[in-house]
Image (cartoon, rainbow, N blue to C red; front, side, top):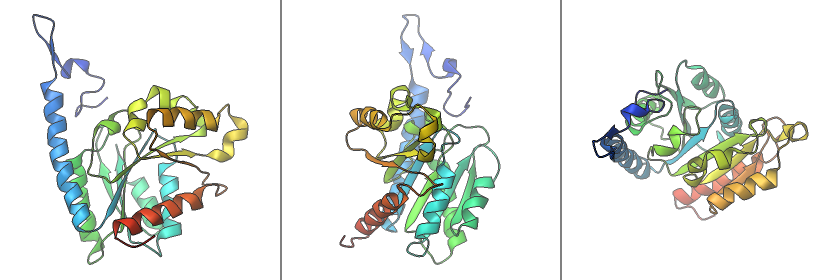
Length: 246
């Protein structure tokens, strides 16, 4: 599936010796370099007072729609920049630009996740686009995938994992790393709860068992349920980042 991290190509992830031992030096080297650049990204964000948020989810969970709603609600309060990760097309970047945010599309050309070096380049492109403005919030919308993005730190301050009601309630159990490495868990499309076998409290309990520090929100972009709580959370975090009393 991905010729960068080797997922779907297990033979590229390790070498089996005569003694049956596995060597994973290639993967370790890849992650080490990614983490090195991620720390550079983090330093840039901190120096500029930017809150960087990495959004991860399966395709179709509603990341871009949530971004659109968030931009509409907060664009008069904060400068918002977006790095849009996708395998192909510039459609998502066009969508968020139409809502009033600055956006740069990061096209991976087949890779199933974003990596820190690409985010680094994208951030500098975003800076040029914004001119003398600096984003208060930088959203990094990762490629739709609950597996690979959870292994790649991009320099973000917050990682947000989303699942939608139609996806089913089993995602925390099936993809534990995505929840263990995140700071916020958002259940989207709550307006569809009457039509699906999705126990919100059970899903929240399973996610919190993996990571008790998760902030949990249940939202609907269609009805507006839970969105104000999400916006207020962001307001609080941005002000804290800038040293403003909340």
